[in-house]
Image (tube, rainbow, N blue to C red; front, top):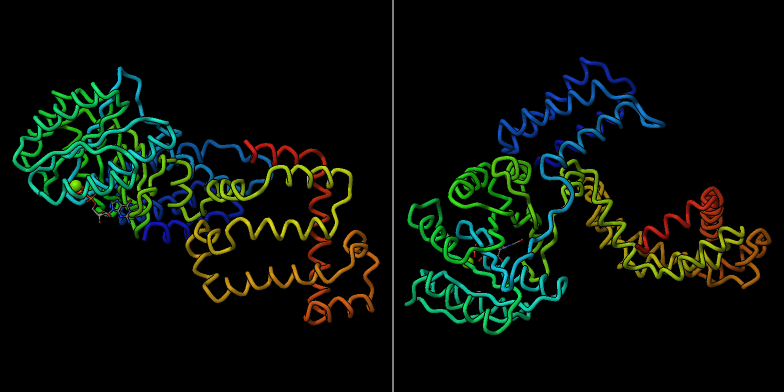
Length: 441
Ligand code: GDP
Ligand code: MG
């Protein structure tokens, strides 16, 4: 897969102590091959490589980065730029109801995404949302939308296979108007392949509804086919955005890199699970990191933020500042870590190989390890926790016995604590507080 290839390359490149014109060429040749094998469109690859080369050869190596790290940084940045700059939000700036038209092939994920989007709009944008299905060719499709719309907590406008898609959509729009809906999402029929009749139908829907957003839904696992389909839809409709679905699957990754370049439309959302809440605003930077196998650091930070009690964090920061970080605080940290959903949920966010390496067995061992540490600290007296330096041989034996672990484990914990204390001391100069503030938003 693309990610495995690229992350292997990234590791190799990172290790390079010196970047010369010829090894840049060699490395970029391999990156180029990996992209082409992953079905990234040729012009997109060419353009990408040209930009990286230009920046790499003209760059100044900054600060403590090795030239290899700097090159990886450039690749990451240009990869993100290929997929779009920043996060492209949904445009709802219009007289309500704002109409969102869903386009794409059968099985792309239009119906699922319609409901996910409804939920997202209700929860994140506090909108009143109506959905309607114009898929009159498959009776089950209308029922499917009804079911998922209910799960989303939105309202569903009834339609039936006997009606014309255009009549259905206009009736739904009239209903949305008179009932003060903010948004109407129109799910449409897809075909298994590009088809003239399908294109004419969705063009007619577009002309009549004047949607503020025309979203092209595409299965990220489709590779080169996704690129061709995207091209055809972009030629037929003024697309305002793309939804890449099934990014949770074993996507080859190429689609994400190409669709933006071949359609000119920004990728706005990513489908990341079959579930109703499996929709995220697409973040090119983050996705580039994922593709390069650098792990999902941003998501990791967010998850940490969600789990960590900010007040607790501030208290901790104050403690560190005054030099009083002790084993009580260490225990608190261990407990925070448990709150973050345990190690297994964090593991999802790590680069694939790393995650694979830390297989199930290692994982439960690590979780057990956390529990044991907690046990050791709990076996200490409050005085020992505040002043770990008083813990000498006899106290260690007592603590070990109390926690039911060998003395070496108590030693290991104390050593780890010392190391952590040293790191904390280094961060004393306001750095920690700044980091916490950023995490707290
Ligand atoms: P439509 O024909 O375009 O309306 O496609 P559907 O919405 O019916 O989706 C087709 C299949 O893909 C269904 O089984 C969905 O559950 C599944 N699906 C859609 N989006 C995602 C996604 O982001 N991740 C995963 N894993 N499955 C998805
Ligand atoms: Mg459908």
